[in-house]
Length: 466
Figure 1 (tube, rainbow, N blue to C red):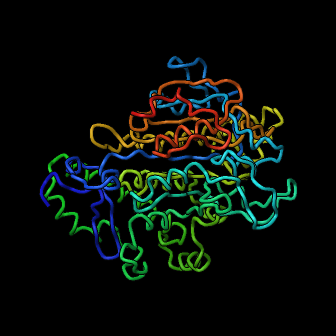
Figure 2: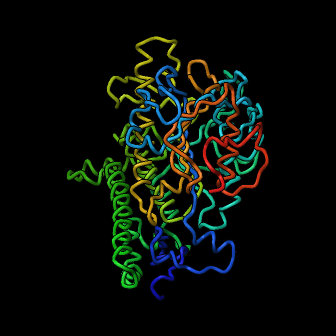
Figure 3: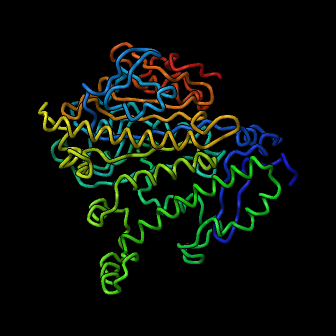
């Protein structure tokens, strides 16, 4: 393959593995012969939504000032290094979820801007295909995965008798159709393998779960390096280091869960016996008992999402920090002694408001981590973050009142030049959140005049035609 004609869809292959590549200078000169191929060869735009359950402490969220002269609030302060890449969005709301029915309506309708159907059974209906899946329909054919749905907590089942809804609604923000929620992956190993392993269709046991994907494609990688310039060789090395880091962290968590790191054979055998066939990440309670670091769990998933974007394995992704009514225990944070949902019902009591704020700030810290990872991933003269639109938000303003007005929303990235960040945008009171959805959908190529109750596509975001 001559230098300068590397395809954007080039894969490094090995026994049971296939690795997509980050954008390299050698791809810039790729000649394509069809619109689909052109879309695959150009620097792509990406969209991700990071969803936080249980709302926020409202009096500590909103920045001071408007436009480009704004000061981040205490909760948003972890985003200081990214302020020039942010759009803080104030006074957007999701009218369709203003039904007084608690968490499930807010979660199930977050990306659909519609009201879910009350049901206690399996006849789910969100009322709309979610905006991320409209994007996936538009660009999904250009990537190995049309979209990637990730999370931390397993799907909850049963009925919440307090509101008369099946708990299934609280486990999904992404809907392939109004009646079909998209299954999310909660296990980092399986998410990683979905991206890089089993390309040949062979079962994992044929090549071994402990084999590094880098070792499997080493021969192909070495041949490719010989055809690249120095800058691309360095970028490839950095990419491999990122993949290796994720592999090592997954393996260490796995060893800790099974006791493989312990020297006492009897203790190790006992832990392995107890942990046999229990997936370390599939049950939050088990993970907590085993001492698995929740922050590391989340960051593994975010790193996998970042690698998926960098390699153009997908251009659309969602991540749920937790399900609706999540009782995730955050006692690992200073000043916090209980669960997220418990603190969200704070009744304006100072002893609950302070931990509630700290938990929300932890979520923002993870968002900042993800933005930092995308910014560090170079793509041409810019970064993956420059080409992305990364939404962070919750389906309610204040968990104490379940209010879907003035939702806590932050949008980061430049969307390939279509967003003008570094501003705090304050819209007219009760402006539809669907306007935001429509604006982002159009930036991903979706040709739509309206979305749910939208009235415009938020031209304030920037030039959507850039």
